[in-house]
Image (cartoon, rainbow, N blue to C red):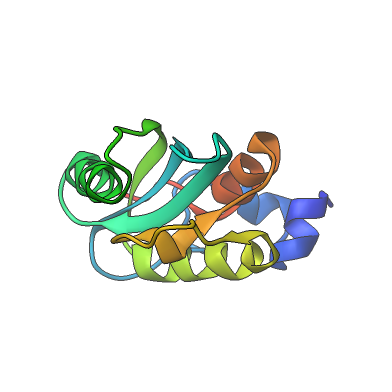
Length: 136
């Protein structure tokens, strides 16, 4: 069993289940992973969240706008992962819990800043991928 599987308490078979039925379950929304470079410190941080609609682009633009208003600089940013889920709320909550020791609070507060994390890219993608499995 992988470290991620142990961490989230599921079997390897569940983690490789492409439809994600064991990890996700209710209304259709999206769960995303976004990468940002903080304008003041140049630190790389990650935002994990949920959104409605066919993509997380609108939420991404809201966060970039909020950061611009606070820092007066457009952040370097990218949507790294964006998937539909029939239970994005539960997936988001589980990812946040797994990442709680990596929470990051920017020097200036803005909309969405409480869901930022600072950790290695490979680690956060592994955590996100293990929980945010595609559902139809």
